[in-house]
Length: 207
Image (cartoon, rainbow, N blue to C red; front, side):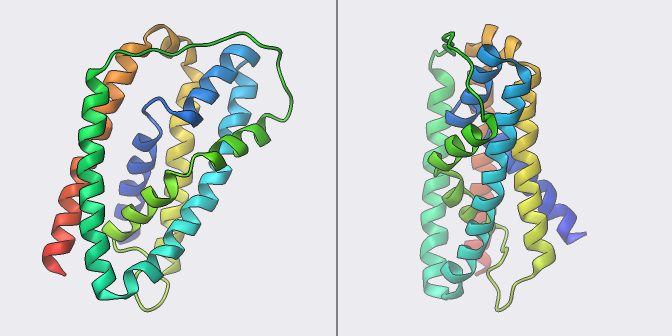
């Protein structure tokens, strides 16, 4: 039951984390426009393979970062500030006007490796997953609880791939309604950050 709750929270955190237009999902959408849905799907798959590595590194780092009680308290407070700042950032982004630009270019091969490269350049998921792992108390005890860790990693992978797959399936609609899409997806991220703020505050209080 605990693993199920953890899985669902991490799944939606990963899913919503990829929703706002960014390097990875815009690369997927752009590839779909230029090279077709199949290549876009390969880019999404390559990117989420890297997400598995990023989530694994994050949850393993969380154990050493949060082992020391003083460091744990400092980082929880730092995470709280980060979540608040991110909530403000996404709220401001939601108020801005924006769009998605696509340029026609000749199709390239090795779309999976392209997705892996783009995801590797996107370093934000590692601290993002570390903060989530800390907030949910994953991998921070004396020994690893591998059932929780595996649930966390799988949820991060499936959640990220779900959003990228939606980009592949609906890239034409996203392209035509980029401004509205960007606006409301950033509102979703604002809500997610506020939830993480509440969770972190509770952890600080009870620790």
